[in-house]
Amino acid sequence: MKTVLENDREYFCDIQAPCFQELLPEEIKLVQQERTQVLFRKGDSLTKQGTFGSYVLFIVTGYVKQYLEGDGQRDFNLRIIKPGEFVGLSIVFSGNTFSYSSVALTECRAFLIDKQAVSSLAKKNGNFGFSIIKRYCELNISLFKSLNNVIFHQMNGRMAEILLYLDSFKKDNPEIFQLLSRKELAEFAGVSMESGVKLLKNFEKDGLIELHEKDIRIINHVKLEEISRRG
Image (cartoon, rainbow, N blue to C red):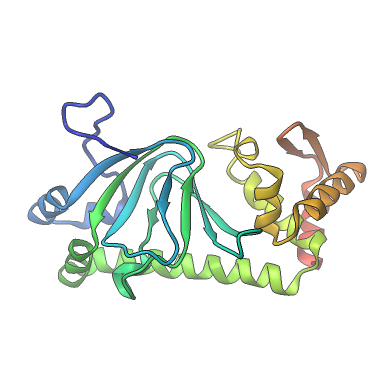
């Protein structure tokens, strides 16, 4: 992680997010005073599960993997965080420690914003507070969907769901699958790497996908969606 100063080549000025457009000039000034601009290299940790957090991160560029740490052998990947989203938003509303870990899948530029500043603005500015709470609730819904997929779906359905989910990022990032190892892909589906590789080969054999080294191309969206629904 590198702190970016105003005279650095990587420096950027504005935070482009709908919620920040709701702030008054003096409130924007507060955010500017309470933020630190940072550059994360690929593989850098943004948050560490169980550690103290005094800031919220806002991703300006790059992609981040959010995950729960397991027993050291296997983690469970929750979602991909893309530009324009927050990391660590939960510490504004509950607790002082991060409930998950996150790592940069690509080079990422981000703002670290003091959580007390975000909390203060949410209390003072109703529109801003509503936007933050709305996003927090959307994240919770996403987490419940992930849990539902793992708990109630069989392995075929889980892998189909994850392939469709990751494929949705291809419009903005055609290399999304290439950012993930087969082990990481399996950890999105909650299966072992061996099972994940076997599922992918079976899907390819059935004509649902094409495997090109680390890249994956979905051939039959309809069939894959059917498998995802059936679980």
